[in-house]
Amino acid sequence: MVIIAPSLLSADFSRLQEEVADIERGGAEWLHLDVMDGHFVPNITFGPGLVKALRPHSKLFFDVHLMIEQPDKYIEEFAKSGADMIVVHAEATVHLHRTIQNIKQQGVKAGVALNPATSLAALEYILPELDMVLLMSVNPGFGGQKYIPIERKLQELKAMCERLGVNPLIQVDGGITPETAPKVIDAGANVLVAGSAVFGKPDRQAAIAALRSKNV
Picture 1 (cartoon, rainbow, N blue to C red):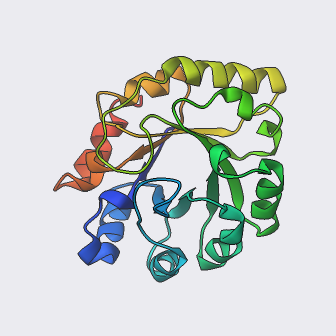
Picture 2: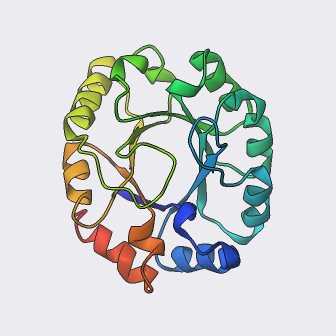
């Protein structure tokens, strides 16, 4: 079963509680929360206060994606705000293993994200510690971008996991639609972040079902 994680970045920010409730009713299992700082990526979104505000109103798994510099400064606060998973970028932290230890010490799951041009070699010595790997299929910073093909990278990641005897979740974020979803699923992804493909549709249940129809 492939997990659908609608990205809050594409929701109507004037009615976030309703938007989150709508995708939960529509069958989503996760909520993907893109945190951007205007430094690591050229955009600013929200902080732990928003995560904390939404947490009492949803039973969804909160997947917090930190697209920020110096993520260690904020991990504890995001964990306390209600994150179930915290994902950091390998490109954004100097001591990746220490950062992953920091996340796990907060009692939440830990993941590492790689930008499209970043080699999988960055993961090899940390992979056994991870609950999830996120492969970006767009350059991070904005929603609604066109999918960058990463099927070969996904296949190579699966092979690396098998060689090391580990089985983390593999998430793809960027340009996911009913047309691109089968490509990444066939290549090994099992968590799909979908922004405008879900929140950009008037019927979120039908939008999630459209993604699922490709996931059989």
